[in-house]
Image (cartoon, rainbow over all chains, first blue to last red; front, side, top):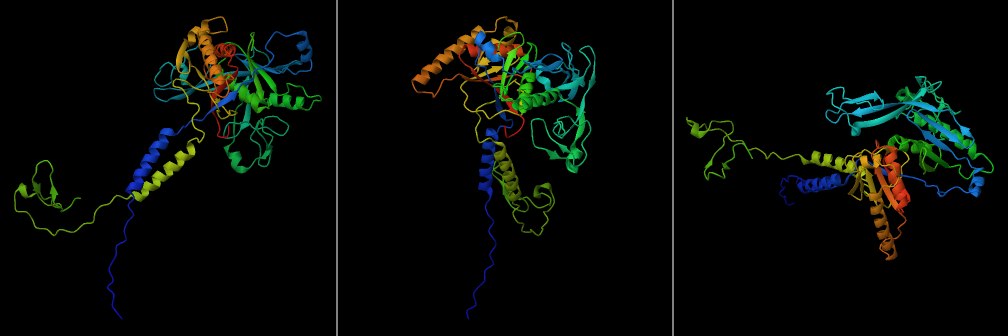
Length: 269
Length: 192
């Protein structure tokens, strides 16, 4: 037998530098292409009947629901050809984020009042309004200052409803059925979810969505079905900010109204 | 490589030895003779860096939209958020409305304060531009350059803009033949 000479080989390491270079280039390209905010579109429905109403169209109106939501400075009202629902009064609260020092604070909105940062006392601009909350206030009439309405909410701030369509005032116990407005799926409370729930001020958009959902369900059962059962018109005054219109459109779509039209109060669509 | 290895200075053109921890020969005193240990090359550990890059890359690839950016958000504009927004499809024209100005396809048309002050619904300067654009679209449709000139327009309004300005812009769009109006919003959730 021949004695073969055994040479000691060192394991060759893989040269990872070109891979690193490739990754560096890839990451740079992807970062330049990435969009961290998702843009979407909300479709607006324009009613076909835009000309002056004729007697024939008035006759056709008789069987229609003509549902509308009226937004004013302190209330939102749902109305239809049969009448109006009680107004949902709200108090506007704005969350500001200062551009100079990123200070975040909330303030009750008062029309015409200048708001200054609580830290550096700088005047807050329009672009520093981060979030606008419309908190439901229970009032007897428009002169009553009222009290806030509170409801149990999940970790995303979505209020929880019971099976009869009312808000949970307290966090539901484990095993209790609940659902979100506009969602037919009934869930049951578990321990993990219950821990993340909180009691907070109820948003007027959710309250209006709840009312609209009830109206939509009621009219969807009618026979013959009104042709405008999925239609809604949002009416607002000149000074109402655009954000409220979009949030109201969102609430209407959540309640099942696919065709949302806009109109100026006292004006035409 | 450092440590007991002869290094050549590029600028000076002369060479000297760098001794491991010992005194410099020119600092005075006889240089100590030390046992020079053979040291292995200190290589950079790239494997962990590659891991980091892979994670970053996967995260970015998940974040990036495969649909492409049909819409881009404008500067100095805070869009409202919506949970029921759809993905943007075909966009023929974009109108921007900020607190300062209103622009059509990047061209400044009118100041927002002027729109706020005016009584009539129609914004004349904007109507002229939109009618011209709509006519061009119709011609392009007839020539077969574009599929349809159905008057699609995407409007990006600042969320703090008064509704008065919004309605005036919408009315002008409708007057010029742009009846298919869509609002650009920030999507609250992924599924849109």
